[in-house]
Image 1 (cartoon, rainbow, N blue to C red):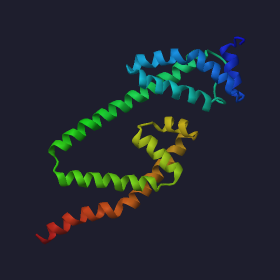
Image 2 (image 1 turned 90 degrees about the vertical axis):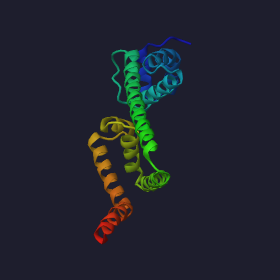
Image 3 (image 1 turned 180 degrees about the vertical axis):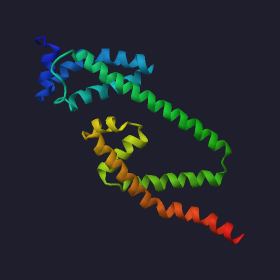
Image 4 (image 1 turned 60 degrees about the horizontal axis):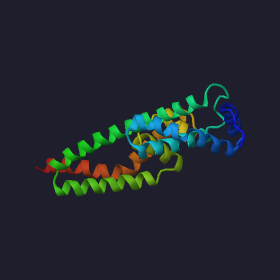
Length: 193
C-alpha cells in the first residue's frame, strides 16, 4: 500500500473518501489512545474518546483546514474531548456526593417522591420536539457548552440557545401542574391552620 501524507489524507476525507479515514485510523489510533489515557487514566475511557475523535474528524470533514498537522488536529480534538469527559466526571462526582448526602437525610417517602419526579421529568423531556430534546440533553444532562452542543448538532450556538430556551419553556408548561399542586398544598394547609 503506498504511503500517503497526512495532508493528502485530510484532503481525501474532505472528498468523502472513507478509505482515507481507514488509513488515518491505522496510523493514529494507538497514539490518540495513549494521549487520551494520559488525561483520563483509564484505557476504556481513552478508547471511547479516541473513537469519538475519529467520528468528529469524519463528521466535520468539510470544515478542516487542509494545512498544518493532522496529528496536531487529532490531538486537539482528543484533548477537548478529554477535558469534556473530566468535567462530566467531576459533575457526576459532585452529583453523587450530593445524592449520597441527601439520601442519608431523606426518608423513604422522600426517596419515592424523588424517583417519581425523575420519571415525570424524563417523560416530559421525551415529549419535547427532537431538536429541542437533543439540545436539552446535551447541555443539561451532558454538560456541553452551547458551542460544543452546536458543533455536535451542526447548528449555530445562538440556535442552540434558542432551542434550549424553548425546551425549558415547554418543560415549565408540561411540568407546571405537578409543581403547582405541590406548591399550593402547603399554602392551603397553612391558611387553614
